[in-house]
Length: 270
Image 1 (cartoon, rainbow, N blue to C red):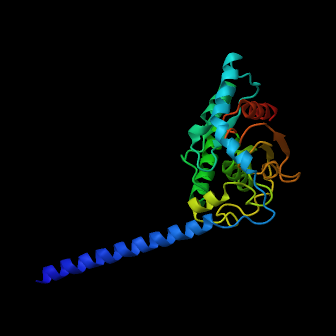
Image 2 (image 1 turned 60 degrees about the vertical axis):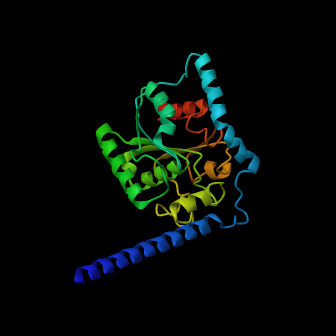
Image 3 (image 1 turned 180 degrees about the horizontal axis):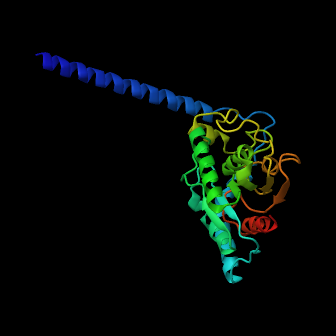
């Protein structure tokens, strides 16, 4: 009889705990949905709907550009001193999306690694700490500071890493990274807030995103960007050392030949 009572009590406790977990899950879903429904602030101007829809054509554009490269006999890249490079993917992207850029830079003689953490699902203190550890480990392994090449959110990571450990970073190259101006001047902030559960105003990594790292910092930006406002990715003097315009979509930054040429040229100059 006592055993039956114990089993009944355990069953009731299990149901109660399951109910509490379900209620907590529903509350979190509702909270994140509210973050995704926040209104666009007045004055924060993301790229137009036309530019945003043009991003859908990115795969076809990259396929056409790859065909041009093949017909030309390959991508001609400048060669110079071999550099240690780390590629950091954008929000919602896997390092494989930057594999074409990695192979091209490796073909030009550089030693390329990725950030080692798979999908980039948003700014996170633990993820940032692990990235810092990896940069430190790779710099010691390569026996030289790294060039960090960050796409979109990956560029924010790269800039913040360079601020706290500049001895391990030779140069930062951002690609379509929203480091300047209003943090809602893009078409991804609502999705970002829904996925990460925190607002773009108070990220767990870095506060003054526009502050320039104490190393050479170059911003690649595109007037055709349909995700991030070009001015946010270009920045102002004092927020970066150089800004270089390329003509590609935001999703094209990781694979467009013009971007690869620009990054390779910067590595040669460095």
